[in-house]
Image (tube, rainbow, N blue to C red):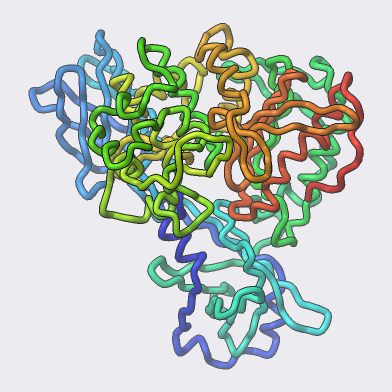
Length: 598
């Protein structure tokens, strides 16, 4: 998904003048006071969350939440309501015995969140015709840290770090002090400055970002900035502890029980834990999980993250689109991945008439990014570029927008062109063929069978789910995607997707320019370790989101990180597998040293 307006403001040049009084002379000691770490954590909501009650004891059903008292509409088993001021909505369905009301809380876009999100909401009957539950929306928050240091010649330099969106990327600054006025000059980008002032009364650095608000940065130390550091500075050396069992379907075990050597794993964790927080390009790894022989054996979190915290999967979520399509097509006879899209999407049939090549488009072309549509996420001028599509307001239906794109070449071939809009079109097929909205289909056919309870699915302007990437999942739940495919489509004895789909999805159908292969929304790589080569397939997303499967070693790895936009940094995170994890497999050869991952 594209950046929200808030992040775009932070990425853009900000030139806000401090108030006149802030330019008054300051004490000569101010430059000596500034070096160190400064932080700001801001919550923008959502305002509506917490206890929700649906009262159906009278003819007019009423809903109460966060001070709102509104009417609900019931049509058969369907129950819907919307709060005034677009503060949220609900769409759900009563169970046949009316003991449960289950559906989705629809959270509107926020300050840092560019899209609306659907969150599963389960209400239980607490008395006759009264249902209660708790709304837990996706947090709309931002953390920013200023790191200021004095150079040997006396100048002040530093950088800004933002754990959620990495907006400080490529923004090292030189700090100029004039009185109480502060000017942060980007040393790598002309005319990019941040202006603020030091408030002597509060001891804070104040920055006002136009269109967003004023941010107060207070002095921090190693114990009051948990998101800035990988782990608390001064903490003891890494000690392995097996994952804590939970009720989410994962069996847990120790490294030794699945024949993994603890020493390379400890070295990996120490390399992450010891990454220099003072480096503007330091790794921002938030989670690293490893499973072998179907058992979760490593679960580590960094930068303030934890087991129950969901994480943006970015384009790693694209792989879910092909999985959902595989599940949906198994329900239908007479259609498959080679069926023309015009047959699979009859409501858009007219859009296929403007070019004969469109009439040859299939779901397989979309999944392998060989559609031939004028859609290239690597080209900012491409009409099908994801940011272009999501920024325009003329067409709210992104399915229609994508299908109306001109053709740039014949569908098919060996060369893949990265196209989020094409992957998202798979959602139209899933919805059409299943007769269900995407959040409902995902919940019933994927989330529940995999014991996934906490997630947030991003939505298009029409309110339908977006499958081009961006769903928020817990790392433990994201790892299940790899385990299901490693197990032939099964999760704990439940057949989620067919073995045929697993085999077809992880087979090479196309390639990208760097010559790594591409299956059905799975990236395919060969891992060289010593004199051995291992096949790997992975779901991959911007910032360092990876679900990696090494079938030969019965191994799955999940990495969640936030080096967004820093491709040269985050794409190297997958090297951690041949560098540390495969050498930990006791019956695998030892890898040659490849240098630090930091």
